[in-house]
Image (cartoon, rainbow, N blue to C red; front, top):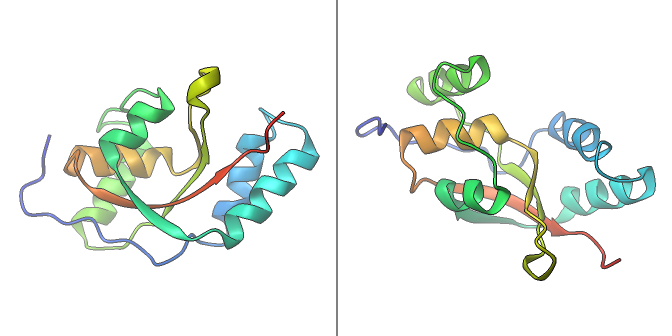
Length: 131
C-alpha cells in the first residue's frame, strides 16, 4: 500500500533508547555477555542502507498490518515528515539457516514498507561472533 509521494525521513543515528530496547529483545535469544558485545558493536557500527522488503525477507518476519498500533504511530510520523530512527540489525547466517534479527525497529520497517517496499532504510548491522 504505497503512500504516493510521501517520503520516509530518517535520523542520522539511532536514538539512545533504541539500544536498551535492542538489548531487551536480544536477551531473549542470547546470554548477557553476547548481548552486551552486540549492543556495544551496534553503538559504533556505521550506518548503511537496505530496502524495506529485503530486511523483512532476511528476518523471516511477517509484514505487520497498518492497523497495528505501533505501525500506525510510525505511519503518522511519516505523514507528518517526522524522521524515524535507523534500524538495529544482527546479521543472520545463510549457511546455518539463521535469520537476520531486527534487534530494534520492526514496526518502523513495516511502516516504511507500507509507504514503499523499496524504501531505503538506514540500518546499523553487526555480526554475532562465530560459535
